[in-house]
Length: 240
Image (cartoon, rainbow, N blue to C red; front, side, top):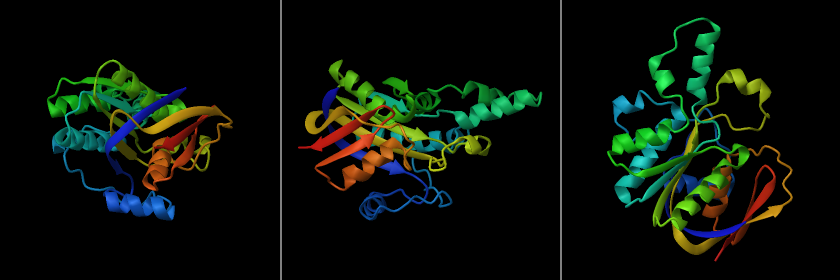
């Protein structure tokens, strides 16, 4: 597989990181992300909506609203490896202990909950899609964005995110796997500033950063070429 695209704008949130300068410094110094660091205050999301959302969805919708305010967006792709795992764990816990399931948890437990809340809060009936593809969720989200570009949509908002993974699952996870909330928003157009081509060679090992933040780290360094590991493939990026 080979495709090209342009990135017009980006924003990201993670513990201790919010503004562009902080992310630039993080990328240059290869700093680790401190899970105990505070998350930035939400800037766009109404309080009543924020109360209904889990940690990752709050970041994803807040960034999405910011990008919709700044850009004319034709379609939206939200991608999340674990989706509403925080909320689904609460549902499973309630069922296991024979407690009543929260109607809000039930209604908001679907994978497209975040993108649905974005379009509702923004009051924009915009074309949207929700993607989950394991370790390669971010790269497959880009493929989804590419398909929308080929369908005639000219400017795509892609948001990759995850929430805090419940402690119940931690013993079964690889020790280096990120378990903290984050979100990355990209505004994408057709173009050839960036080229991505798949290559064989990945061993499928769990990286110390989410795939999208690995991409952001290398992108912000202005590296002419870099590779992002996936589950079965290497995604090689080249800057024009």
